[in-house]
Length: 97
View (spheres, helix red, strand yellow):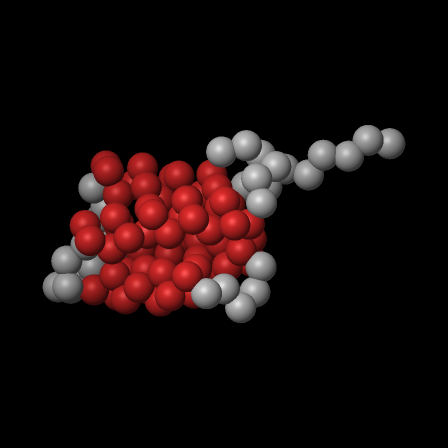
């Protein structure tokens, strides 16, 4: 995705990743809190009430907290998915003086 992509493009890309991630997690502990968190953000990304960059920022913070608090170990594929979401969160602002 281009660095200048808008919120709609980011929203669609993140939703695809989140659905796959949600399916890859079990309903058992310790993954259950993460699965619930992802389900919450799937709903939020489907009908955002705030700008997508803000949702992405909040998601990244909550995921980090959830992983640490619940000591969840992710598979390599899951880690790669979260890395893609983190990359989609990076927005570069270009301007000239």
